[in-house]
Length: 563
Image (cartoon, rainbow, N blue to C red):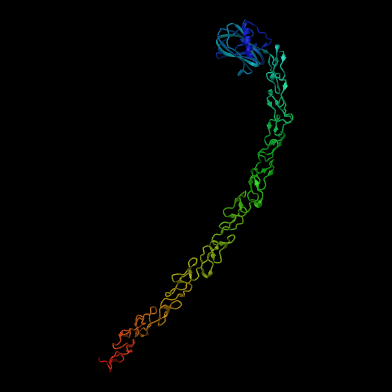
């Protein structure tokens, strides 16, 4: 709209038409600043009110910025420039703002200025304090006057600025022509800000949304205050703050359960769970039924007599059942301990014991027996589980309960550390230190009696006697031969050491002389005329050959056969 007005008015002034206005020149004698060739200086000739005839003009070329300070924010309707120029091209930009360092509202621009005395009309319906003309001049122009028309009094509009702006206009600003508000104070809307904000909105231009108000959810249209308070879970004048710091309910006046992690802002239910050791909708119940900890998911250990453990950390307040230890009684007894809190020790002779009652359920170390392995092996047993039998300890003494050794030696007939080895190699007696008789075939290991008999030529309990006269050999059961002069034969072999009596021969003199022999050792030959002689005397007891006679058939007979 502004550009159309500008073109129309430019056309009018350029052809000699005058523009009648009832607005006031609010730039007259106001402060003016110029940046020209990088030099900033005061230059009030452009607002002295004299225009072309009486006044002075400001000559400018190159890049420039002219800043007029109205002293306060005023209502502007339009701007008129009075310019003389050299016929070159020029480029103006006209802006307004409430700040000198940020001119963000553009009123219009002048792209070409002709030679002549011209008035330039620029529509500029704004509320502002500062008006800026800036641009670049190709050549030189003379700016003779800048007139800014509007209302000297804030909050007025219309011809002669005689009408007050609507009361709800923001900062009293309204359109200088129409009187429409350029913005509303909080709580109002509409062209003239005559309408309160609709239900559910408030504040500047009714853009704010009411908080969580109770009732109809309607807040005060200006400041957003909830007139009837807040719905549960919210607080603050505008009910725009959720309950926090452990509060809930109406106006957040109630406090979450002390054991809640955080509670529902509306009803206080601990919907994010409970602190350690608590449960229930409001975390009002301690963990029970042998549970503890977060959400009561931990399981108590073996507390004494099944007592409930501490609801928070699971510790057993009065100790542990037998067989368990630790502050939570969740550790079985170790290192040969047992009983309540594992304070008792297994018997020193246990391999391992029951953690509850200390019974040596895995058995005893060698040499011990009993429920608690407190008894030494007895009844002639020793070793692992007392399963081994003692040897033949002296006088049936109990052997060592662990290794089975006989502490005071062995019964006769046995030897070795355990007295479990019978005597061997011709030994007998206590610890087998005595030797069997040398003539025993084998002797009794206990008493040395030659119970298996004697060697040949010996007799007696211990084979200590040679065979009696006329006997020899094993058991002295053989009879001696006819040794010479009735001498005794050898008791072992039966030999006659000095030869034989008459009529026998051989080393034992037990063989009769063969036919034709007689005498000692059968050393003589029977007479030649004998049919056979006495083996002892040589007498021809079987008669003589024919023609012979006599004891030895040494005589020729009477009736000899001479043929």
